[in-house]
Image 1 (tube, rainbow, N blue to C red):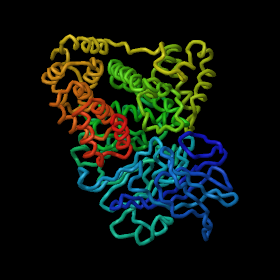
Image 2: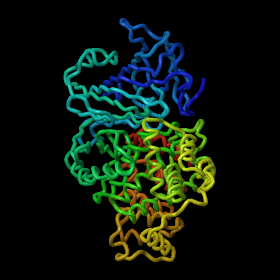
Image 3: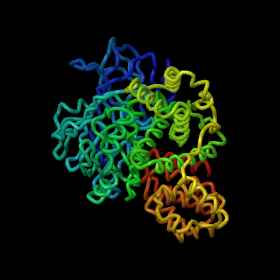
Image 4: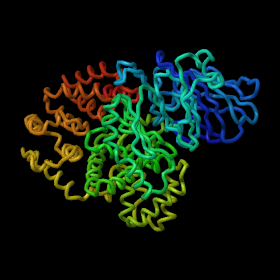
Length: 611
């Protein structure tokens, strides 16, 4: 066996699945999908073929002949805690396509099923989150970004619901008996009160970008190729439409910087608050947390990041999770270039400043395992969700910014466009990027220590803190806090959430309870609608022993499932002794069913580490 990815059973000596025709019957009562998959290989194959699965019940495997012939298969009895179970098929000679039928588990790690009382619409809801290695819990696949696929998707849902997917919407129509290809029986598939939503994805994507959602979903048009969808009715849709009104302009800016937008549409789906990330860059249908709707268009920066992925991440993809910085470092750089054009250089510099603080904070988090401060860490045996951090984002950004400073922006822009055009619709590794860099920027290895940047731990000495008047002023005000000086109302009069976030991130951690309460009494930060501000403040307040903030901490952890907030709040509580640790355990026991499985697992890991 020749592994291509430490997080997949995919054998590099065998052809990979290149096309998938999927039919899903969504059983909301059982939190289960009954499914079939017609899988096509990139080349004919005979003998054993391994696919990734996690917690799937595989019912049958067969050829596509008429009549179909059964294909022998076996599912590993003891699942690997990270990889799941290998599905081994023994294919007849020169097999190109084959069919599987299977069902997901109610505990599928990619899926969250919400009952009507958990949704704003009062309708059931389900959504997928397949990054990093969770597509295998939805359908058997080569679940590695090295294996790109095209797919068709039929979603059979209750007729009162709507469905969306990261693919072109073909039709909403009545179910047909021929649709399901064995996913369930005809009677169930074609039952009264069911509807089929049909989708097609003609461009190849890595499996982690497979995505869908179904529920009481409405929409508002934003522009000729942009639309916002949401669960929650007119109020949420109207707020989202105002927050993201400038998205079409962002797409045009992205095209001017990075080349043509290749995905036709750039639609957005605002998910329920349990969504575990800020955003997920699913092509054609970006998934977003409702916490990005702040009422001041600041949420557009998250959208700028997901938009930037349309070129770096979706168009060119990291080959494995060890190369994750190729997705996120490039996208963080691209995001800040878009923000610089749309919102100005000072706003981009604040974004960089928050990132710089985050990168330094990661050095503390990984001080006992500096492997995960490398741009290309060794991830064998490691669950990517357990070590997800700002390092690939911010150290990756710093690396690219260092190259830009060395060769100048015009030359770097030319290099970036050539890089995107050369590798689009491909998955590459770090070594491929470095060779391309050295070929197209001769002598760069003599000017920048590329080995130190990629393989070294920590922050390289030629990384750079951002330089802007606003950034310096905020940092200076934060430095005065230790001596008891709070910023005056005049000094913060024009601050948005981002300025407050940067200020709070730069405050000393060993502050007195009286200082924290004085700051909050003046500016009501614990009550902020901006969760970036609220969580940064609560993270500062918890270690001071201020029990008056326990209620806000509890509300936050029970109302929002975004891991960016869960991780620091649970970690800060769990590191304390006594009441704080007990509070964390009680809140988790009461809130865990609200969290997406990925977020639930991360919170469990934090609490067990500090138990």
